[in-house]
Length: 234
Image (cartoon, rainbow, N blue to C red):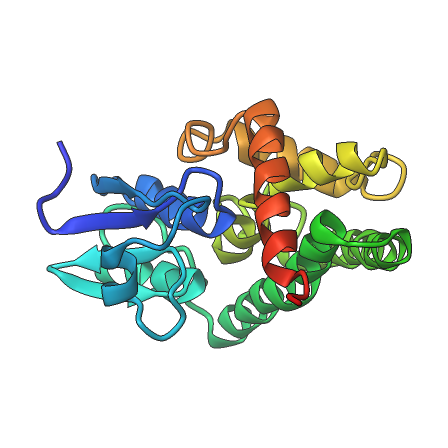
């Protein structure tokens, strides 16, 4: 049974929603899941609880809405301090590095992935693919620095960067299949391959990451909706 004052508004396919659910699983916090249909008009609950960005996820605690996935992760880590290991490191410098690389995942890597998914021309997709491939190599290096030889970016345990990047694994596979390129490979990113296997098999993660075929089907519908919205109107 969910805690009466903890609720997640989002959709199963959103990596940003997955982040919140993984964090709650790590902290052993039960929650109510409220599904938002991304292919339909935005719900009244979403518009009311996130009037600025009008995006999922929205996390409700004690009826207070909290928006933006990385902010939500930090909130969860600060509120539920005794139920599991910390998501963010206690050392200020290490904490700053975790935040830096999580921001890189969102601002650079995910942005390129999204362009690869919805690119309208082959030229657009080719440029985005080059950025994604470069990003995986950069993240391979970051893993070597942050993990200190352990299984996760967070060391022995799943941490902030693990959740930020790991939530994208399904989409990385889907988009890689669409462009017939293995985006995370033994040849270029062997440590990321091992990390992805460890992350996906973790108890807090395995029931959150979606089926890749189901996600691929959803991706086609989402791409069509986004391209329709971006198309010029006469």
